[in-house]
Amino acid sequence: QRSSPQQPSSLPKYNHPSHDLLKENGFTQTVYHKYHQKCLKDRTKMGKGQSQEMNTLFRFWSFFLRANFNRKMYEEFRKLAVEDARAGARYGLECLFRFYSYGLEKRFRSDIFRDFMEETL
Image 1 (cartoon, rainbow, N blue to C red):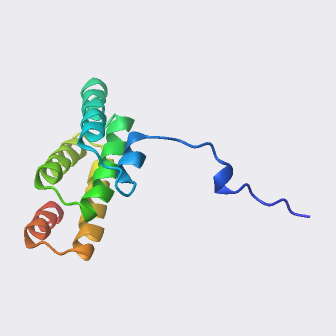
Image 2: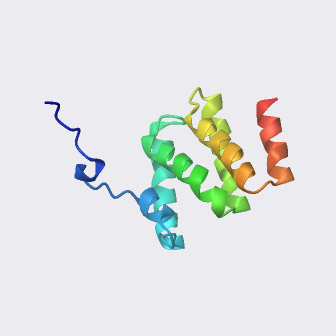
């Protein structure tokens, strides 16, 4: 008799600010600002491309911006992802490309598409 694998619901609940911010109506400027500052501080301390906390911010931006586009947030996402890639860490860029792929599919924006082409060519 085979034992059944544990159900995902049996996993311990992990509350990360990025998860709460992505919940419906979960985004608040105050929580985002604290989370954002923590990630940037960790990136400064650990170095470009070396911060796991920053990786959670890249992942958050990749999802959040698809439905809640914010130019300033997007421009920071793009700038930091490219900086990390130049330092040899590609995770931010991978998140940025996921945003391009799914975000442009959800709502096409010609200016964002131009950025995408610029990053890929």
